[in-house]
Length: 150
Image (cartoon, rainbow, N blue to C red; front, side, top):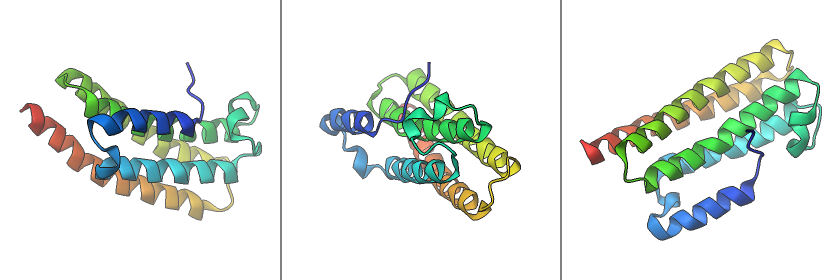
């Protein structure tokens, strides 16, 4: 099942979570949203199809990689929200594991885009730097989740 780029859904999830805990006050969530926005801009730049909601229909490998970056970047804040609201340690750790996989995937997609011939690699380096910044915040957050149950 593919999840489309839907920032309205992210705002909806954020609205639900606001009642429980302000997600905007969590540094890793803010970093995830920054990553999401940057991914959206880069996907728009590198894709041949400028309609981001239709990337998955394209026959271009570049468009599929851009779509995958976008999809994974959108799923990260959703997984953070799920982990924050969950009372189950195993569910939290499942979200943590899922986020780890998405981080690795985004990095791999950047490499794929470079190999596909994206001319302005500086943009991909910016995305990787944003991913690294997110990862540092993610590691701190992950340790905090473990302490909550430890």
